[in-house]
Length: 168
Image (cartoon, rainbow, N blue to C red; front, side, top):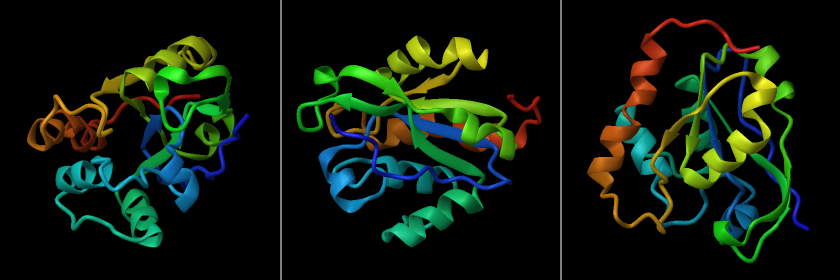
């Protein structure tokens, strides 16, 4: 059963937490989030924050931290066939208590319906916090154009401007 091989990205100034479901095969091979070249996460988020698209892992990590974004996944381990979200079974959720107390997270977002499903099943009640579901940046979500994703994900930028209570 694969275990999540990628450490979360966050620091004390992180204000937003974006959670995926579980890393794809390409992401697990690269050792960093959204490693599949067809996944639009980096194109979308860099457009939202009007930045150049980060290419290297160091650039991606810097981009996230400079924009107050913490990044991880809902699932710590599971049974999965390849990168197929529909094949996920025997989920063990990640423990977000290692991130939330040492950040300024004001809002949690999930990248797609699978992340939302497992967040709601395992973490929502524990944290007492709903997550905002954003449309998946996965290439499997071909119905969403890049422009439409950028519009919907624009809420990330707006959320960094609106003071809200911290999540604990």
